[in-house]
Length: 327
Image 1 (spheres, helix red, strand yellow):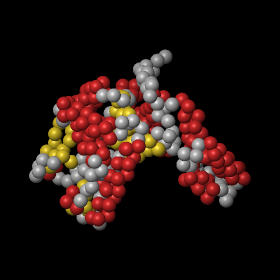
Image 2 (cartoon, one colour):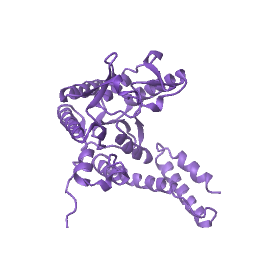
Image 3 (cartoon, one colour):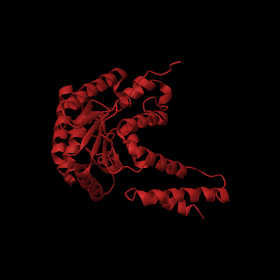
Image 4 (cartoon, helix red, strand yellow):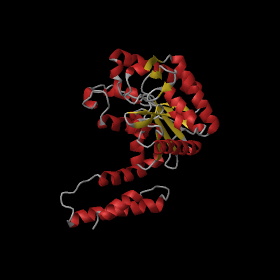
């Protein structure tokens, strides 16, 4: 009995290896995939501006990293007792202006260096809507819960999405000629825009991103959106808000992502590191027993074997955890 629509994700001829640097930018769904790559000890940098949703904001952020733009106090605004940046997530907001500015510029510097060395970038927009300040027409990446009357809401034309992404990618490939681009579209539903509006928004992203990947070299499309919407296609694969994909769905998408892009030579190492990661999340009922100490010894031995064979894999956090919880 067939209970799921058959859908084979096309495997890329170009593969990801453990020594590769991988840059993630975009929606919260990109962080779900990026976090799983980090857990498996791939060299990952995620969202130096915090989560970004629309392709214009993503394109502007990428350009700012390439140019290593330095933000100044004039780029910040005060609201709700905090200093904020319209181009950054509220994770950067704070009560001390200089600290906020330092954290933003440190992230810019880190992004510039990482992008210059990266083999891969995964770009995941989630919506075709963006916002501009009424007072000056400046595009914003995050509204920081400011009153809606501060903004004009824009439904980006396909042509503008294409232009924004192509310009950023062209500049990125000149900055780092070896970088390869994976586009995905977030399956997270932007229900606040409306159900019909969300579907129109995703449709524009799909059209624009397929145009870009077909016209540009070293650009690939991974169907995260289609896997969740058309293959899983059931609310049991969503969180209670019926908007965000749950862990089961993300795990399934990630499994297909690895099949499509990660080299077969890395799969065994991934498996061993996953075992260690799962073991770290294991909560023992009786930590003082010999059985538990043997379990901890086993994990430490696995870490030593990996460290000896793959010196570029950083398992220091895991080694510290199992050593500290051993006695």
